[in-house]
Amino acid sequence: MSFKFFAKFTLVSIFLIIVAGSVVRMTGSGMGCPDWPKCFGFVIPPTSVAQIEWKENHSFFEGQMIIHEEELWTAKTDFISGSYYNTSNWAPYTKHDYAIFNPTHTWFEYINRLIGALSGLFTFVMLLMSFRFWNSKRKIVTLSAVVVFLMGFQAWLGATVVYSVLQPAQITIHMLVALLIVALMVYLIAEVPESSPKSSLAFDKTLNNLLVVAIVLSLLQITLGTQVRQLIDEISRSLNHTQRELWIDLAGSTFKFHRSFALSLVVVHALLFYRNYKLQMRFQGINLLVLVVVLEVLSGIILTYFDMMALMQPIHLVAASLLFVIQIALYFQFKKLKTR
Image 1 (cartoon, rainbow, N blue to C red):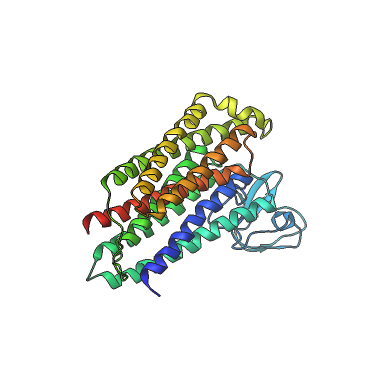
Image 2 (tube, rainbow, N blue to C red):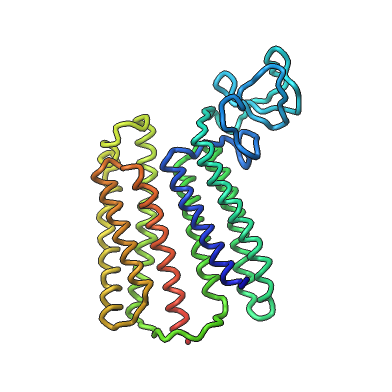
């Protein structure tokens, strides 16, 4: 298997983390597993509340968690319970006080973590494979090592998100680091030497400048979007996740600026499309960008006028992430054409 193929496969798996994370956020499943990296102390998470309740004459293992009297407790060691609850066998879980079990939320969060773990494994394998470039292009090994480090850092951030009981700022940092990893993966793939004939496409300075502007605007828009999402999460909690029709109005000027700023993205991508079409430059990535922008705008409109429809939230986030990925890929494609 070629290194470039495996790197692309790894990139897809990392992007799936963003997709899975957006679904977790949409369904409110972020605390489905109250500990990390295990889930209620289990490697394979529980499927029923009976698995995390105290029972007499039952075998418990060290680290197993239960919910008892609306609090989380952790078994101090392996033991078999007697006829009454013995507090000396249990230690209170002190990282947070969230003690709710929902099997659907648990499994959504577990699948999210599983995808993350597999992606981490893929990046490590990619690092090992990268050593074939040690003598010819050491930058590939360096970039692969940085990706592995950031995946470990991202896993640690995932733990802090759980321990903070889903503080919006922590979730935002978690998301931005994921985008950084994706951007580095695109850069890494672009640095792999080509084995196929050179492209007939030509570099165009105006297209390149427009693309740079588009990338900057996208990063600003994503940052604004994360701030809006933080506000929406706080408003949702304050209203006990009800009265969705009020969320947008209560988000105030931050949301309005985010919505208006989207117009700049539409304009710059329209200019990219027009120049690509006018000069017949055949950059298919630009056409794909336009389609993703349309999806992003439509999902934003639906969120605005249909009371923050839950299904549109992950679509909106994934579209923004995909837009950024395609922009970065095009940027490195242009860079190669410029130096050819």
